[in-house]
Amino acid sequence: MLLSATGIVKRYPGVTALAGVSMAVEAGEVVSVVGENGAGKSTLMKVLAGDVRPDDGEIRLDDTPMRFREPRDAIRAGVVLIHQELSLADNLDVGANILLGREPRRGPFLDRVAARRQAAAALARVGLADLDPSRAVAGLGMGTRQLVEIAKALATDARVIIMDEPTSSLTDRETGVLLDTIGRLRDAGTAIVYISHRLEEVRRISDRVEVLRDGRHVGTLVGDEIERRSMVRLMVGRDLVGSDLRADATPTLDGPPRLRLFGIRTARFPNRTIDLDVRPGEIVALAGLVGAGRTELLRAIVGIDPMLGGVVEVDGRPVHVRHPADAAAAGLVLVPEDRKADGVFLEESVRDNLVIPGLRRHARGPFRSTRHETRAAAELVRRLGVRPPRLVHPAGGLSGGNQQKVAVGRWVACEPKVLLLDEPTRGVDVGAKAEVHALLDGLARAGTAIIAASSEMEELLAVADRVVVLHDGGIAGECPRAEATESAIMALATGGAATEGEAA
Image (cartoon, rainbow, N blue to C red):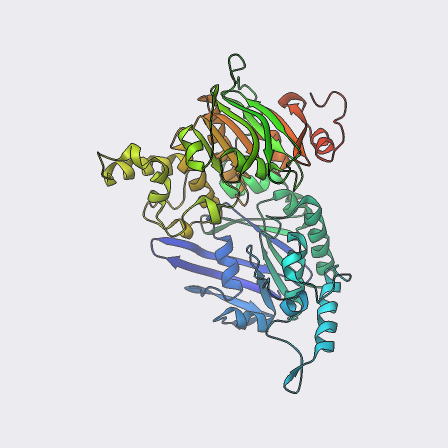
């Protein structure tokens, strides 16, 4: 084996992140590592790349025992980790990023000709032969930035490239380009270790899949065994709620809408207006390509961004939203897209994150009640399945999926009349995704009106009573649940018309 890990153990206070995990990858092989959030995937990758020192176990490269004390040791040995949060320097150009710390020199001076030649060669290997190495990184799209990260790894003569959720922020087209690049690297003999919650990607590119659960290796899938049902069963140890979650749902269709939007204009699309009603107990999925205006609409509704015009009504009463606090007071709340920047307080405890929106509810007179807050937070942790279930644990120490549960749960506790969610399960594993979907279904059945913006087609079709499709800042059309198909939604999202019989 080119790279192997045997019996890897890593403990943190109160938590065993890895309990004797073993895996290996050959040259010219793509091995995917899947598991729920908190299963130990990222910890294992950091051990392989020298970011984290294991408490026990052995790493071998070309059958030679290795001790990586820091990432630089692993890079010198040819093992590079590309983190989910990209590490490019926006103030530098593409070539400078690729060669950072390894710039060719002629005497004491930078050899600019050699630097450009080396950067161009690395870019060509990832299909970016037309990208000028002198172009600023700050102006690149997420897909191109991801490929530049891979070029940067290749410039170090990497033999093993580890990718942690590389497509979580990419469009479908950018994802396709990245997966094609991975295929070319495999054909050229590079070993790829790939982490993703998107199981269709895993099925498409993997030669082998290693499954982790609760810090342990629980199975290996190869060839025809690599299919969604088998991966899910190993990951979560149970069957999940299916796509018929809302099949018997009966939103309240008589009486006034819970949420009414009339003539909404956003700063991004000042010449387009949006009219939309959402009934009590209804889940409306907001679809559209990147840049269609989904995020802008949700942020304007709750007062994060200015609304240039229009009326927002909750239960028939106009809501004058100048600030998110105005929206929250009316029972209208948003779970934002970027959980790290806007969704949770990373340095605060899980308990404080969950109870902050409802401090008055738990207070006794003018004072906070730690006892009532702890009881409420513990119930939410149980209900949401947050792992590890430790209320004093800093939210920033949770896995991405568990952070997302906290971001959703803090508003669920407020029992909002209208819940808006922007990419509610981005970066969330299949088990946590099913739990979030079940949570939304339960809220809807209790009468909450829900709008969920998502770029994942499977999610749209799983949770929606109705899919409303945006194109260039306006509503291009909508599909009721019984008639919503991928082709109908994509036709509307690209500015066309849905196939007859597939959309209302």
